[in-house]
Structure formats: structure tokens, C-alpha cells
Image (cartoon, rainbow, N blue to C red; front, side, top):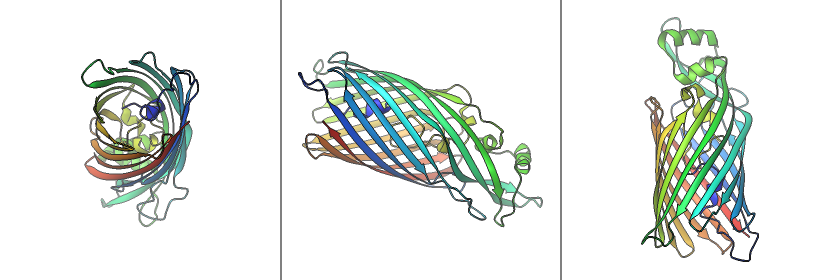
Length: 359
């Protein structure tokens, strides 16, 4: 799957006809997500709005851009009194170029960034008191993160050279994450506080998850994510069928990113329908689109394999769209994501509505 804003318009925008030197597209998509899972999961609900645009700079060059604002509600304390100031607001923007070199070849380039922002949420840590009794410890978690990335891509369309039209694309990119995470307060069900030093001592003797260890550390080093995506799509009459495969690598141990699901939410480069809870190592995404007059019926599945020891996720999506007029298209996306990480299962429901205007 393509990672930045330039790809969002590949199916929605058609190059202007001969003699037309200016054209454009404006679109907006509102997405709502809800996650349910174990109390160790520091993410619950989020709301995001993405405004997108494309303008034709010439008959062969398009400029793409988008801006997204995401509101993360933050998870409540699992025990004791509620923590204050839950959630956070994340901004992200991207800018790209799409050059139609010929009728068959196209080149893509894009850059994106998310300025530093802070999310306040909660997590639960298993804790053993002085009497050896195990009890849940609620942690007030503060995550400050930012990202900066860029990518290059190439696309080849056989058009009528073969009995079946094939579209092949290859994309590669880099994304740099910078994050600092800390547990500012630890409390038991009776509101008694536990010091970070006490929890750190327990981690040394009994062990803790990589996320907790990152939050207890003074600083979290940045990590650069490198990815490469190959996508092959066959156009069979009114139906497009394809599969995309993405491989990811990291400049250092990606578990140092701590609570990745919070740090990357709204800051990552993925344009898929899921929201990963851990650094991804491999993703496979089959997709299909069938056209019936003004109606477009799309569906996709996705398997994400997280880095070693962090499990995997499955995503299923349905994407009906309708061409209201020749210039206006509206769509709905419904997705279900199932995560299996650290032996715990979580479910994420996502719903989106959007509209596009071409002028």
C-alpha cells in the first residue's frame, strides 16, 4: 500500500483532457475509531479529520497535499481516582508530486511531517506489594512524539499491451520518529501512590514489558523506519484485483519507541485502514474494487506481522462509494481490526465518511 498523500488520489483524479491546463480535486474524510482491550492498552477512542487536495500544475504534473488533525481521547485510569487532562491533539501534513512521464509510466515523490505534540493516557502495570500480593498499578502516561518522512515511488500501467491490464507500483520511504515517554504518577486502587523507583526495582527483579521500561527511562532514542511496498493490480473489465506487500526495517531496536500505538497514532505514514499497536515488520494487503455504473464496491484485508515478540493484527474493510455526479463522489469505510499482542487480544472498530469534489 502506498504510504503518503499522493496515492490517495490515484483512483479519484483523472488527468485533464487535451486543451485543459488546470484541474483540481478537494476531499475530506472524517474517521472515528474505538478500541477495546486489556487495561494495559493505553488507547481507547480517537477522532480524526483529513482534508486533501490535488492540483494539476501541467498536463503531466500534479501537486498533492493533505492535512490531518487527530484527537486521541486517552485511556482512563484503571484503578483509583481518574487522572486529569486525558488525551491529546495531533497534527500531520504532507506534500507530494505526481509526474505522468508517459501514458504507461508515472513517478511519485512526497514528504510528510507531524510536529511535536503530547498525549496523556493511562496504562496498567502488574505490581507486587511488600507482602507479595499482586495488584494492578495504574500509570499516568505522558507521550510526546513527532515524525518526519519522505518517499519515492514508480508506477507502470500496461494499458492495452496485454490481454489483461496490469498496474505495478513500487514505493520506498523513510520515516523518523522522535518520542519521549514517562509515567508521571503511579497509583493503586486505594489511591496510594507508588514511586517510579519502586516500580523500576521490581522491573529489575521480575521483569517488565519493553513499553514500561521505555516509560521509566529518562529519554527515548529516536528510530528511523525504512519501508518498501510492491503492489500489483489487475484490471479485469469492471473489477480491479490486487495485492500489496510491505516490508519494514528500523535503524535500531523499534521496541525503544515504547507505547508505539499511541506514539504513532496520527503521526505515522500508513494510509491503510488499520492503526498498528506495535512496529510492523511485514504487511500483506489484498484488495478488490468492482464498478457498477455509479456505484463502486471496494473491500480489502490486511495482515500485519509486528516485530518479534509483539504479535500480529488482522484488518477487514468494506468501502462502498457512489458517484453523485461526474464531479462529486461520496464514500463510507467500515473496518474491524483484531490485535494479538503479548498474549492479549484487542478489537478496534473504525468508521469513516468522505466526499470528493473534482473541478
